[in-house]
Length: 317
Image (cartoon, rainbow, N blue to C red; front, side):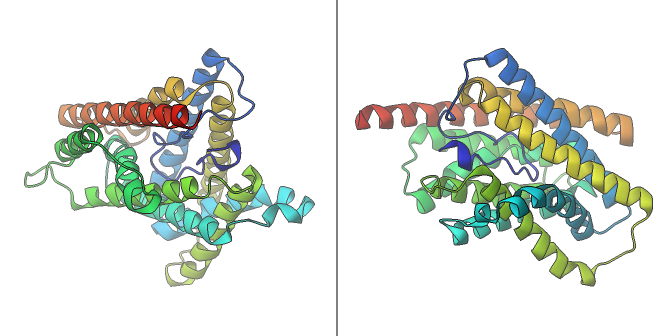
């Protein structure tokens, strides 16, 4: 994947933000890269906390609309200054990618309304497993027994977090899972258009405008007049989310994905802290155990994908 198509428009699960190959013009500065990724996870957790705060007083569609409105406003200056940047070599894939990321945002925001931040974040970490599974029909990739085993283990981790059939089960736990599926669709489409010449601004512009147009069309059916406080929180949410995306790009310019990917999972720490400080919610032991299983399976899946990619490159050499 080239630098121009790094899947950074985070909707819910940030742990799957990683290019398939080293980004171009990469600088060997892993310490700074790690710090940038950790900072990005802090910002993403702040964005999720804002979503949960707003979700208590506004419909999820309106919360996501506020975020995409801010995102679009931040992208407009670049697109207006150079309109040619909005010309895509793969507009259908760009719109499909934008819809996938939008669906992820909607499902995750809806889930945050009913779930603790740590629970929603831990469940969303399963997205790399869905990405691997979807890569088979969409990209024609072959997935071996080891990666299928990792997917199975990851789903066991989800069951530990969700605990269906017990008094701790919350039906809203399905929403972060649907968010992960939508996110995976967006990322697989990102990989599919990896050979296009679309630049970063083009990709972000399509994501912003797709989300803004769709949520604007849905907004009249759920509209509730937001307070100035809600508008301010929505503006802050858009700013920190965009800043986090920029930090991710800068991080992957300085170190390989294999070095940085594990640090994406620090989002669980920051989400747990934000949940405790803002909502007095503390993740229980089973959530932490399930999250550990999901993270381990995700890291192993990433490890196996790197091995496969390395073999493919050697075969091309």
